[in-house]
Image (cartoon, rainbow, N blue to C red; front, side, top):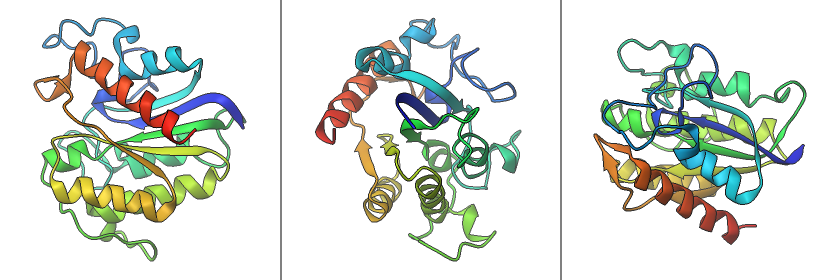
Length: 212
């Protein structure tokens, strides 16, 4: 494990063209948000620079859900709980394991009104993984078991359904994973602009210091 390496599993908020695996869906740069023009404008790039960290992988894909009930034009392979098995497995990336994993999802599950479900910490079924909270627990369980010495942080977007935000925070507590509830993020078309990206970076940076 390399303490200076970071892996990200995210959705549109964490994408930038050329910075995510081939085949993932890109949101940024986006014509509707003119002031996020380069990777340097993203929250994750700013966070890495500020803390002297390096990116191992940014497995983010626009429009993706944590659960296996996916958006139109996506397949189940695109969900967080399937992508995690290629980027956050015990094998790492080219044999490298990160010192920090940032899990930033649940937004699209909320936007397409996926079934929230209830917290479930074992005995997941194919059916249960179509609901948000069972899938989120399944993700935390997998990521923690396959990265036992890595600091894992669940980033929770603001403006989601209360039961999703609260449930994700409770799941993190159960697994001993730090959660960061974002607040007051400036957005354009529901996505962070340059100011919003800076706010995400600031809030995550402060939260990482709390549990250093």
